[in-house]
Length: 117
Image 1 (tube, rainbow, N blue to C red):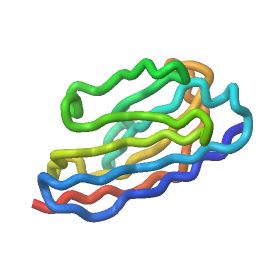
Image 2 (image 1 turned 90 degrees about the horizontal axis):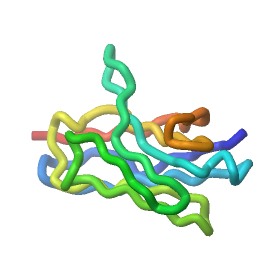
Image 3 (image 1 turned 45 degrees about the vertical axis):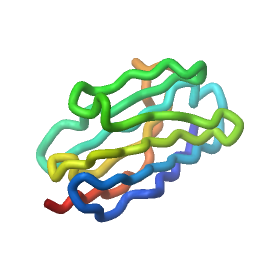
Image 4 (image 1 turned 60 degrees about the horizontal axis):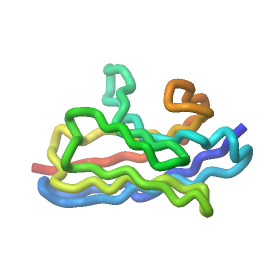
């Protein structure tokens, strides 16, 4: 099992930036893949971005060119740099980890991101 602790959410104006962090502890192999999802009230959780231990990344179309996912394997931490934020980006963001990007099994508690217009 892996414990994931997120930080970095908050309130920002449209066009601004935020950086989310997620520190993992526990089984290292269970963090071969890490990522960020988001979920608005009443909506399904959707992938924002993912990254493998080797650095292969994948992004949702709605964040391409604005968000960047990265990780520090030595610290077992994944980051999400969010630039050019829009009010539509307002929601709770969840860190996730798993053996592969198709098998995310561990989840953080979520961090709120609010973008004001």
